[in-house]
Image (cartoon, rainbow, N blue to C red):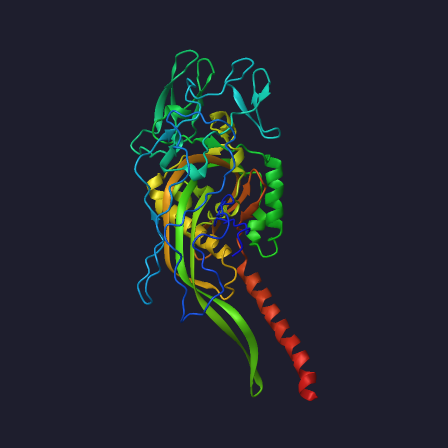
Length: 487
């Protein structure tokens, strides 16, 4: 493989993942030229150092209560493990648990109550203006920008487990109803955190927010504000449904309206991963393709050389995005279509802002209901998929494919944080004739406008059209075949 090849691994979902290629020749890569299997070239020498690339710089200087991960170059990888002998059982790819220790990173730790107040009049009666993307003071009408999200580091320097304050383990026995003391007049106000992480003091009308005052991981670290207004979202949903209207159920077409769409903030875990991958297997390269005739039939055959293939590289995954709500992770396709939420990714995660409950006014939100330990297996599987994709990008010579017999992905460092992402959501409850029930969703990415969803299908019409298409194909085939048979 040429050293100037640019490798970029894309994740199954979420933001593009930058897999930073080594400089020069791929480390541990066995060149395609050489003898076919039977005279297999040896694996690369062990202990070859890898050269990390660079990652985009942070948007601003991080403000942390705990020191950031130690700087410096990533730890040199251990010697490459040779492939197992033929016929030996192959262990599945798995992410090695990182070292213990969880530095907790807090944004704006000096804030007294976690609330952003108007810089002109000091009012806390603030909400988002979707048209401008700015916070609007309802008292003096000044507009101003929120604070940038500062939880970001050079992925190559990540070691161990690093957690944003909003990504720490949830204390599930903590009461949803908590009491906050108003910083303006001193009154005590009860807030139901299941409804929203914000309330208004009933005495002085000062806005109260949980933000960093709830030490149970329930409040996110960052937020991506709405950029698409409700009217625009309604248009996008109507266009999406309109393209599927022909096969839609008549009852759905009669009842469909976008008046009831809702803007909602959904919780996601956003993870950066510093990993090292080693993959070994056998690849084939086609050398000749030819046709063999047997009677009235022809058969295409090919010749190929087989090679032992190895790929060893550092893998830097930026902003892997995973849902942090248990009911969204439970994607039961027989009863709902909530898996469409993943289909509207990605979001511009480099433009997130420090969480501020003022962005939530006028919208609904869900509270995070899963902790890191419940997502480790899912994230590990996705890291393994990204590693395989990246290895394949480095091995395009093997046009007949590669069978990986040995895979090992070890995680050297992680950074976890929780982010609220905005979605415009339309839902329709379908009661089927057989008594079964199904909940349809159409979701709009409130930043990019990407839309995905499902609508109830009128199966009799679908079957009738399918039968007509099949009949038309048979008739057309006969019209073509009859002149040929007569001649």
